[in-house]
Amino acid sequence: MSPSVQNETGETGETGETGSADGPVPYRQIRARQGDDGRVTVYQAYAPAIADAALAAGRFVAPFKRVRMTWIKPSLLWMAYRSGWATKPDQERVLAIEITGAGFAWALEHACLSHFEAGTYPDHATWEARKSASPVRIQWDPERGLHHEPLDHRAIQIGLSGSAVDRYVDDWIVGLTDVTDLLHRIHAHVRARQLDEAGALLPEETPYPLPEALAATIGATLHPSPSPG
Image 1 (cartoon, one colour):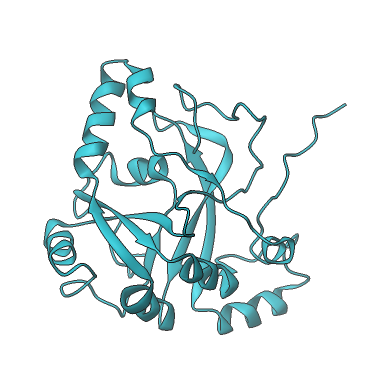
Image 2 (cartoon, helix red, strand yellow):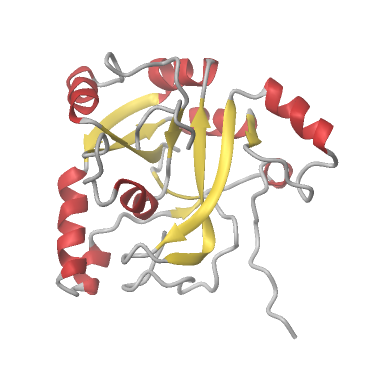
């Protein structure tokens, strides 16, 4: 994340290992806590002043700044890694933000990868044109386990800027919950080597239904790679 970006900052087994009961996880799959009404939960970490104001208002208000890119993360374990279990400076409070399914879909539909990728865009000029027209950035970073170890698959990070931030703050948010204590409880179990107990506290994050054409645009993977041989 660049210095100008606002500070904010899976289904896993008990040890955070890759895969699930249904088989290996696709390399770049969006996984999130999803409600029956289509709502999607994302996470952000903030300094107490921003978190307290947001919780009191039910939306992000000052000292939150709309002029800066704000990153949302559907993976709680990646958020735990990024914030150091909600202990890093200006990331001491982690919020679970429920947003509308329509808002989450809009963000993906208006997104561009942060960096050029030959397998996703036909050429650099095409990527530059899409980036210029897109208020949303996508990054795929290694998913993390309970010990913050990198897993074999990736977790999506979604950066909102400009009109996307306004939509997020004004239209998409339907609920804010402070999950800082939850992260601390999970971390305490991990430190005590109580991995079953830690894993039991994790939310269920299921594959997000991503249309094939959109998956290609943001570099997502819909199916696991075939085993060699």
